Structure formats: structure tokens, C-alpha cells
Image 1 (cartoon, helix red, strand yellow):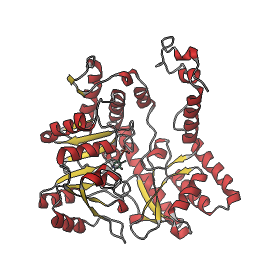
Image 2 (image 1 turned 120 degrees about the horizontal axis):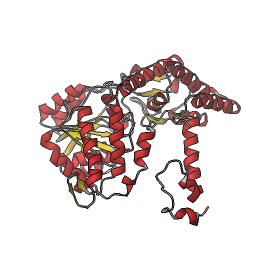
Image 3 (image 1 turned 90 degrees about the vertical axis):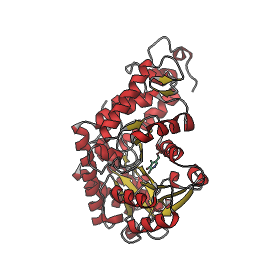
Length: 424
Ligand SMILES: *Cc1c(COP(=O)(O)O)cnc(C)c1O
């Protein structure tokens, strides 16, 4: 459908007035995509561990005129004019982030979690350096040495794993590998590790071999903000994070470090790996940090963990093999094998029922497991009874005869629609 000529004249109406549906008037084709996605998010269960629902205030900052502003550099030292007002947004975001996490310095410009990791490597390493990180087959992120990613191409990664039986990080193995390979940096952090990471142990091992410690806390950083997970800031030289997972801010990244590395980290972000900062996103990060400092957010993060534990327990009762026997966080990984389904097939059947999640590696064997989290459903207001209901729906979806699948889908829709992520 073509863009309408009348609506293309944006000078006529203020496009930032939320009460005017400017987009539908101008571009119904894309307006339909937005409406369709809003419907999908509201009538199915969002269990992807890295997803959440941001507040209307965060959305307002994202959709603001700050999106128009070019702002290369840092507050007070920009390469563009007219930055005085957006500078305030970045100063507030930095001040809130350092207060929230107890860090000397925060860089809030990273466009994504991956960009934050890239900047940390750029600040601390040279191409060809040896880095010890969790292997991708065990839950390491692409930026932890995947051959398909800059990290695997430019650095020499040595992987550590998890114990095949317990699913837990084997700190003795990490120590042995560190002494054997003398890495320049050790990375701790994972896309699927459901337990707290022992940052003090990692610090000790890094000190023994003279390595820097990079904590990639993309997943747990929101729990850290709410006091529901240990804070890596006192232990790591640099903490990399995302702002869009449990932390419930806009899509983006962030770096935290001590005063001595502040300038190197800032230069590694801009101008080394990025151009102009996204000031609308930075304003939205500031809004999310403000929310994360509230008692309501503290309560939220503890509910996220309580819900994950309740869901893991209920699924274990249904016969799922829960990796590590449970969780300390928002994240659960499980082997649906005992129910007679492999991870990929399980994801497809759950998806057909409206339960959206990922597959993941398991600590043992070649088959895949499923990975999911409770950040989004907890934002929707779900609690223990709903976690028990979700566990029943998992089993129903995996066990259903194909002709009964629509019935399971209807039950999932009924549950999701009782907890709308946005009102009105
Ligand atoms: C999510 C995640 C990232 C990357 O975040 P993006 O914003 O997708 O680039 C990096 N590391 C870990 C451990 C993650 O979980």
C-alpha cells in the first residue's frame, strides 16, 4: 500500500503526539505490521529468556525527537553542534547507571550487547591475543570466540565448559586452562547458564595468571540492579551488559568499569567501534535505569527468580530434565528428552501452541534442549499459579495429537490475554 501524500507532510501534525495515529494515516502497511506484532506479543507466551516488555515511558523516549539528533563524542565534547540538551540525557543515564551498579564509570552508548563486548576487547586486547571464555557448545555467546564472529576471527579463544553431569562451571578446569594457556583476558558470562556465577573465583583465577577479567553480564544485569543476583562490578575489570533483557530497557548495550579504564573504554566505543550515539535510546536507557532503582523493580526481579524456580519445579514434576536441577536466575534450560521429544521438535510444537522460546546446547550429548525465562511473563504480572499452569501447557503442547493442538493454543491464548503487557 502506498504512503499517502497528505500524511507524508509531517509538518501538518505533530508526529510525536501519541493521540494522533500518524503512522496509520501515512503508512497503513507498516502500521499493520506494528499492530500484528503487538497482537502476537499479547496473545502468546513470551518465554524467550532475553526478552521483556518495556514500559510506555521507555517507548515514549524511543519514539521521541531525540532520534533526530547527531551526537558523536561525549557530553560536553561533541563533534556536532546543538548537543547541549541531549547531553543532559546522557549525563543522567551515566549517573543513574553508576549509582545503580556501584561502578566508577559507565558508558551507555553501545548499540548492543555485542558492541559492548567488542569495545571491551578493543580496550583491553590486541588481535591475536589469547582469551579464555565459555565454549559456544556450553552456552558461550557468539562474541566469545565463534568462528562466524569477529571474536573468533581476531582472537585466539580457549573454551572452558560445564560439567556434563551437574551442568555447573568447573572452576578447577577454568584454573587449569588459565595456567596452561596464560590468557590475556578471561570472559565469564553466558547466554544460558541458569546459576549465579562466582565472580570472586574468576577474579582469583585471573589474578593468578595476570589476566583481565571481563564479565559479560548481558543476561543477569537486570537481576543485579534489583539485588537478585551477585554484582560483578567489584570483581571484573570491565562489565559488559545489555539494557533490554531482565533490565527492561531499550535494545542496547552498556559498559561498566573502574576510573582507571574509563577513558580507554570510552575511546573503544567511540570513535573506535561506533559512530554517532543514539540519543533517543540513551534517553530510554536513562528512563529504564530510573525504573530499575525503584523498590517496585527490586520486587519484580525477586518475583522473576521465584517464578523461574516455580516453573522449573513444575516442569521437573512433569518429567523434564532441568539442567543443574533448577535455577538461581530468570533462566531455565531443560531437556525435554524424557517426554520423547528433542529440543528442536519441542520448540516447534510449543511455538504452534503459542509458547515462544529457544533451543540450546545441553551439557551432555548432541541433542538440543530448550531455553526460556520468566522476565516477560513476570512483567505481565504472572505468579506461581500461572507458572504451574504454563508447565501443564508445555506438557499438553508436547503430548497433544496434531488435531488437538488448536485446543492447547486456545488455552495459551486465554492465559496470555488475562495478563496484557500494555493496557488500552
Ligand atoms: C544477549 C547477549 C549478548 C549480545 O547482546 P546483543 O544485544 O544481541 O548484541 C552478548 N553476550 C551475552 C552473554 C548475551 O546473553
